[in-house]
Length: 441
Image (cartoon, rainbow, N blue to C red; front, side, top):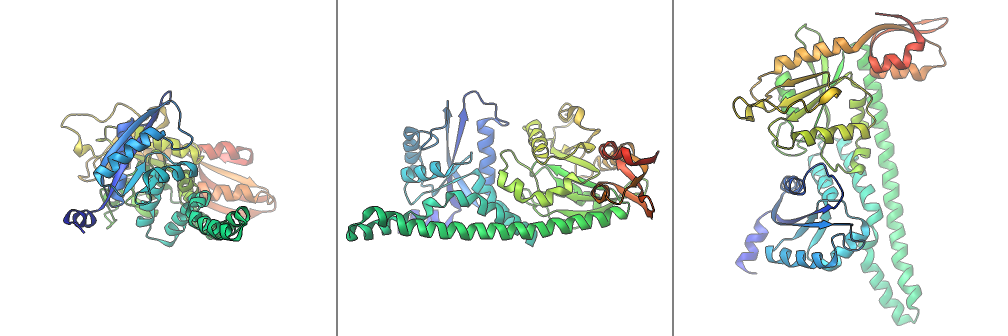
């Protein structure tokens, strides 16, 4: 073994990143910015990026994604850089991955952005719920890609069949049998994980109902990964909360009580950070956790004001919230990391538009502007809630459940006509339940 090879093994795994830009498309980030973000993801996963390649295409090649000529060109660059893994910035289909592995050879791994993010999530999941969610997303990603993992069995079957004089039957049988066994096993694991996560979802629902009865509003922190949500929660509470300057440092939701200027208490919940091209398998797997967002009384959207792509980060978060079908909950836009802005430079010009009820500039590190944020939260909560009394027939338990999930309950009593509830409602819920209204303030 050469000394050079020993040095390479002592370093992080060497990665080569590849990005594609399609003519006629308008991606959220430029190709170079997206590759820079991919390199940060690779660094978070424990890799060292040693090279990159880009390709402009009119359409995706059905075989190698980037075209056979470009694939050969990248292969030479990868060998020269002595990279061990190639990371594509877009999700590869099973066929693309299979064909690219043929081009690059068995010694070079081919993965995509989805696999990289799943790996980071697996590294950072610290609770049983987080581990279940990541495991489910990994299995759902792997299921359609099993064929390539069993090619060695097909080759073994083919060799035996040739000796037996029945090449067609031998080539198909054992390989397919093993593949189906593996598929059934993964489907069984997916079903079990979904069952376990459904129990988590039901537990969260019960917890939300109990929390609603206390009359304490719930505020959800949302934002692009590494925008500073955990740092802000730490600044607001003074608690010892894990903070790291890296992508997806926090996956598991964390809730803390916070006192507003009036003395009123709120519950503030930190959730997983978002990112452009967030894998759909992850969005689905983390739906139980992200229900905390949909059932909040107020969303506080935190953006890194010092980042050059801050407007695009805002758009990516809004796109993910729309994908989660989050209702029109009141929102505050918080420009964080103001301490990193040049002296005298204001944050971005009103990037949030009409979607936000307030915009505040803060520095979670220095504490500057945090008191203004608390005042904005209190003002927005007061403006967005109505105190009402409702009467629900006993056969409309679904509406009562909806109320307990999203409103602040003041009192409840059972009458001959139905369940009479006095609560503080967000406006979107008021519109849905106004047919059951007795009085409103």
